[in-house]
Amino acid sequence: DIDFVIVTGRVYLIPAVLTQLHFTVNCNPGPLEDVVIDRYDIPKICPREVQTEDFIRYHFNGTFSADGKKFDSSHDRGKAFISQVGLGRLITGMDRGLLSMCVNERRRIKIPPHLAYGSIGTGGVIPPDAVLVYDVLLLDIWNTQDTVQIRTLSKPASCNRTTVASDFVRYHYNGTLLSGAAFGSSHSKNSTYDTYLGQGDLIKGMEEGLLGMCVGERRIIIVPPFLAYGETGQGTQVPPQATLVFQVLLVDVFNPKDDLIVEVKEVPEGCSRRTVTGDYIRYHYNGTFQDGTAFDSSYKRNSTYNTYIGKGYVIQGMDKALHGLCIGEKRKITIPPHMAYGQEGVGDLIPSSAVLVFNIHVIDFHNPEDPVDIKSTYKPEDCKVTSEADDLIQYRYNCSMMDGTLLDHYESPSITTLGANKVILGLEKGLSGMCVGERREVVVPPHWGHGENGAGGVPRSAVLFFELELVELQKGVPEGYMFVWLGDGPDPLFPAMDLNGDKEVPLEEFSAFIMLQVKEGKGRLLPGFDADSIIKDMFNNQDRNEDGKIVEYELKLKVDESEQVKRDEL
Image 1 (cartoon, rainbow, N blue to C red):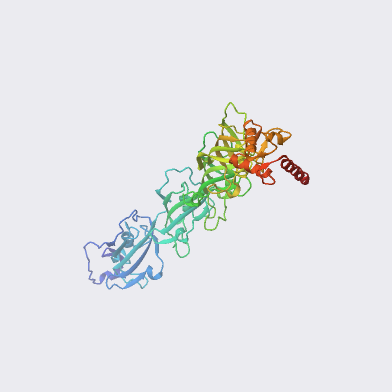
Image 2: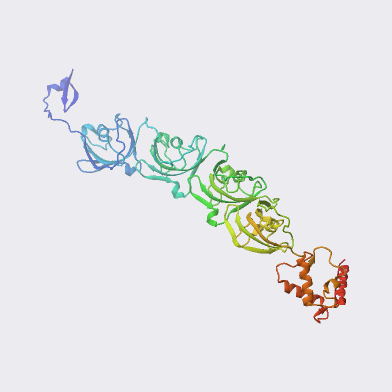
């Protein structure tokens, strides 16, 4: 036979024979103690509290309430404890004591025996009826129903493209555990993390968290352990079953199928010519990455970038983008890495697999075969006499580059002799064949101008634009001559020179004869010099014996010498 005895809430089975004996039973009819919780360090921000069925990772020190002696410690083992709450996997007091706890919270949990190991104890470590005290630091919370959490911190106002699977991305990140402990950072390595999306190169949660991002966007991505490194963790930095928090800045994105993107910002009116293969172009540019970080600028060097188009002298994407441009046009050019510097990059200047963005402004372009382009904007109706080699001319001009930058300007006329190599060849050509009063616009390519070296304020290989007006024209004489006949001269010459018929010609008579020929349009003096000085030089050249007069013999002798020189040259 068996009798039942209830002692302190427990039921004991006692053989009937023992019921004949006398027992003294001490019954305590009062209520049982519950768990006592001391939340002595609570974080200011607590986005999530422990709930039943949550998984947690925590550190603890376990001591006896009676004497403070330690019986267990996760700190001593160097490994946090992982368990699920509320399903009986922990002692009842611990299941209750961990509820509503926050990550980084510290609490002291005092557990009476009936909610711990009772009157039996366990394994020689916990004696019967021991009151236990656990000092707990919560490190992590997650649930099997958790998903990747994405919080956008900032996003560019303009976002023309977002990341998709198969894109290649470059991003910076700071990685921490849920407790805030850092485990990795691209910033500390001074290098972005570069990878393809959707190819399994990242943990599943990061793959998901990076989708739909814009360049320049900042996100916090929270990844539960089963979408991160799970039960194994990662090295010494990421423990098993760790929730990971990534603060991400997307720096760059492209797809291997991407082509060049050209955005026309400004096209001048009246664009009559566009760049083609073989042209030589001068342009300014600002070069940035997609996040706006600058890597180069021609403006800072105060010098245009000059190159031939379609000859492979620049990266493939730029070579392609430079076609079809007008002088003065502005474009934004986005070049994917496979059309730029690829995986190699350029030293510390261009990272591996970087998308490049160029904002360019075309200053000018030309072709090595280009002639001087001459356009007459005004021509007088009476235009019988035009400028040619040896003529002395006066002209006004403005000189500028093709983008309108003024290089030279004179209100007072400039003077030159055509054919005397006193001006650049292109200007010489532009000034030839002009009437007095005529105005022209002349485009001079560099091979007709100052060439590859430039000059003074003229940049290297610059196309020049001249606005010309011919003010005065004095017909000239061939180089080395002081006077030329404009037809057949008198024959014989000496009698024509001897105006008074006395068989001798002094300077005054010689001067009167020459000036008469000029006045009647039969002869021409060297322009640009004092007429009296030129005539005196001519007279001295004929006055062989230097007696102050020319006689027929001297004039004949001079003519004979000239003819002999010509025969010797032949």
